[in-house]
Length: 399
Image (tube, rainbow, N blue to C red; front, side, top):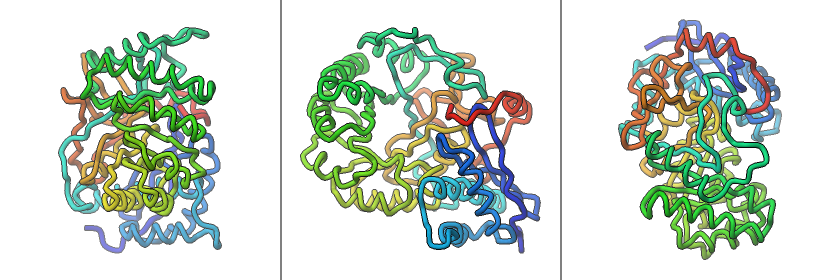
């Protein structure tokens, strides 16, 4: 174990297609990686990391809880908010990576040990054929969806068949909320029809969730009622994120599990939401909600409230790696999201993080990835693949 180690620098990496990574340097030569990023606001988070860095240089990186509090209280009376919490999250992940490398253990061992050796991963399904892009390229570099085409229930079902039968996913989530939001209450039937087609294709026991994207409470209640017979794994984001109190109204008699939390920052919002007794699943984002340190506490709050955890993760493979380390330790873990732009299909297998990591995650026959056993985050940058990624253009818009 290092003695008297101190933080010397916080280095920002703008990683294509649009990610922001952080490398925390120490005077002992050990570095840690994190992801301080907020969709649509990368420059603001970078500036906040630089501000927080001035409070961290010279401090022991292994005093993670203390460093978290120092960062949180560094705002001259202003605390929290999405920019600050995203910056804290990225730094926190990097500090855990340093600690793990210091003692030669994966992060999950430092959090009390693993509850599981594999993590079930879900992918989003939509009304277009699944596709992949080369590492570092954005979403719009691939895809076969024709402009102006209207997806039908059959196109959704065909996409689900490809993802399960060919790509190996054993859990999916439908992103159909925009239809209902655009059409109001009149869009409910089309959403239920699509989900019904997916359920018929995948079977009654297949883990199939749905994201309805924060509609008006009247629309949410109508959607939930229509989805009851189709038994979703969970219904995500049933209320506007600003109105945690509405969860009580929407969920007091819901007969399906409700999930929320991807845009809540810190344990306090989750504590308030869980007190409504309406959530069955919490979805903190490890890069927004406060990093590994805070998401571990949120998981404990959920456990006390009889809720499970499905970490939100629409960002880079680095965010996914941090999420998997925490997933391994959570007794009330449900399923892990990942960003489909990070998928690669090679030799009939689905890889996550190829081109970024020496040993990317690979989906096994049960739709799971193995929890890495290497020190810290358990991943190492692939020098050849990553250099190619870094030659691609970086842009501020996510993905």
